[in-house]
Figure 1 (cartoon, one colour):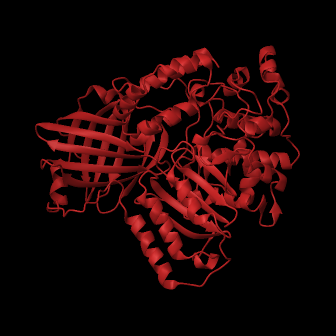
Figure 2: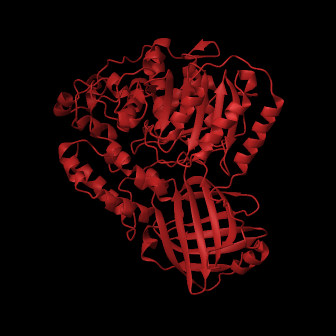
Figure 3: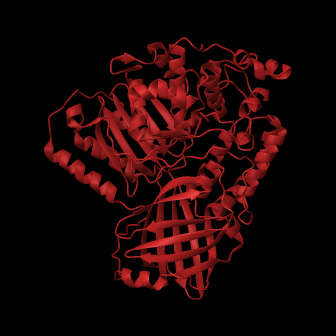
Length: 588
């Protein structure tokens, strides 16, 4: 552990919780995420569940149960059996045709890349870091790292303490890792750490002379037809490995099928059967609070089921059951850190079983399943249902749009320094922070609305649809994200007109809601986001994952009042801003 880096990380954490201060990333990333392409190309054949041995009503009941549990935060789902998609659906304005961030789910992709290198005989699992990075070692780090192997990185048993928390404030991650202390015994103590994955990415570059992406392009991805993706890089230009991959759900599904088929794709062996077996069986027993999975080689292995899992933060999962041959690819917006959520128990109940190869066709049940799919799609994020009748008449959209057309509102709040258009979680993950919100401007465009969020150094414009959503590409200091926006006018309990704008950041699980209250005596806005509103509940698990397990740092962190931090989190992720109308700007 580097005390200086730990102190910087704590200072950043404290700054994030302070809503009156502008947030500044201590690290500059030289390469920005490119604009990702939407794609409607389909690889897998689409068919009825019955053709693959599962009844449509079984699928409908399963997805219905996932939707009913609000803690899951389902955004999209794809079910595959026998290399065929038997069901897929997206909720509300969410789509599956753009690469999505995977968080730690991509650790399993790193494992498959290592598997290719091992299969080619170019890397051994028992090779030591001291041999691979011999030129980067100091005499002291050579002693510290002498027992750590590739296998230890893959099984999260390296016990190296340099992790995600300190990487947020460090530029040379390889150096920091090699110079780090350990906080356990390598090979036996499980310590989940994304920098183990990063080092595997660095090893691939060291051994092949190619970056992780270049190596995958020439091996796995070329064989599977995966081209539309992006992997974020560290400040030194090496793929992060443990996070940062954006990939289409259909393409991550291909990798799940490859594992289900034991490393064979279209009759060609890409990864040895031995490696797949070893990678998907228990190599390290994990604490019970992590969920019902142990750890293999960067792939989770069911404790009590013959299953494998690619698992990512906030509900990004690929779950495969070998007994049924079913693969589930799901994207959610929740605060799961590992496998504590209801998704896993529900999925086991429905698919940890045998199914026949095919079953009798049932057109009526399949038709009902397709109607159900349309209902899932029609669900609008954030719209509340009531068992009481809604008494208010529908508002006049034309009149409401006319009333705010061409009007600008300045932000007059102390917390404007830390508030921007982008969700705060997105800013934290990308290390790309707002410099503070100055004003909001509304301009009507037929039956849609252009909303400009002017920050201190840049302006973000989105097109907001009312009958249907509009799409906009918004750039945060040059980094593009696709935003799908839909608005509606309503009233609060006091009859005050309110404009609600829901924005889904399509490549991520994040959504943001902007509410504007047009009370002449109290014009204000409320910005909230999901899944961040659930972060206080998940905070202990997140901190346990990120905080180095060293004695000095652990004792210092233990002094922080958890309730106090939760309150600060709630305030940081749900902002209320005072607004004052300024002179109207000329219409363009």
